[in-house]
Image 1 (cartoon, rainbow, N blue to C red):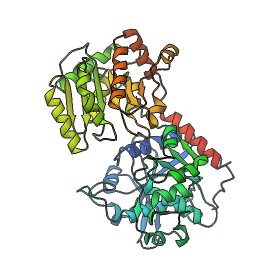
Image 2: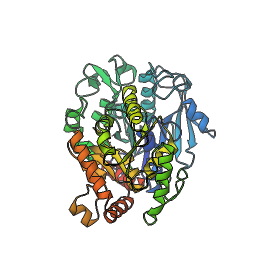
Image 3: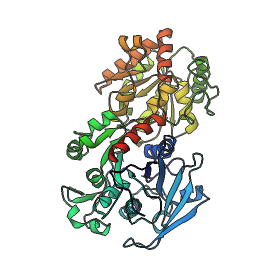
Image 4: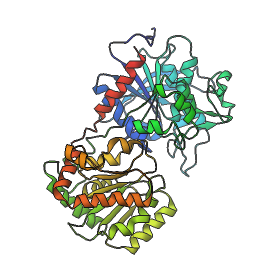
Length: 494
């Protein structure tokens, strides 16, 4: 069955979405959220999207109904590989599962073992995922269903565009999305040919990265188009320091680089129907928010003061998220007066600093070290203001959750934060576009000034209600993002 060429558009656009993780089956971060939400949103806008994912033991157990689609035995250095079909729980999105127990049937996470170390054979594990994606996108694939687009995600699928580039005959077009440029899949050069690439690809104009093989560079160099998770981040990664050594390549490919802001799962994040909240509410019934504030104060041992502004933060406790800045200005925040509610886990030294701060200010600073899904929803709903002073943030989700929950955020002007939060100025407050507070320079002084602007606005109840309703009225749905991805696909097939 011949594969349609890149220049001929099929009646129904077919996309193979290749990913190493997918919520709620296997997730380590934002990539899992995107993989769980974007494919069903694409299907909602008329794209036949199917997800290719490794058959990890946890995933296999979570999807009991599976059907054998094909047996593949022609991939060098591997035994028989089975391709299974299943459906995502909830959305019903078709799954294509790479079933190869020697690589995926093991304890630990998708990338790390139970002791937190990289699996030593990750080059083979994700090399295989890339090779199956490329095979399905080529004329030699084992299925009657042939994608028009192979959409890859992060370094774990980065070899697929390179493999398809060198594959003979008709083939799918390729897109790669950067979710985290800091992780690049770097391996010794002797794996280039063993993973199916020609020796000629190992050069600066190819997969070579400072003498090693880079899975991510392979995808960025050979893909027909690159996307990342916000327009501002797409510009930031074309220079230092956020280019992480790939800024020259990304700048050279800027005509083929698009930033698309992630969406939000509005079934999971909806204050009017959130099962984690003691009282639901909406933009038209904001009074219910106060009950969540009281519940949050009780949960974290804060004084039950309804009129004292409560500032929340749900984050990895790392320098990247600006937690050190929060520590530097916390005493001045609570002197306003105000309260702080912090939830997260991360760097042990920063965790200890947060614990010491909370002990010094009982009743004013509440802290929970760890991850708690229900508490994360309560922090979003019960806080008056949300803090997100990230040093860099490719997209970010919590600032969008905050706006949806009527909790105006204070954010640093970087990446997706700059693209999604409209600073409250006299002009934006007047025209109804303001949704939060944005500061440009990443200093404690500028962060504190933005927090104080937020606290001043909070004291003006009319202004504050308008700001809350502006944010709650924004469209952060995945359908908006899916339409932008479809537009990218269309440009590759016309």
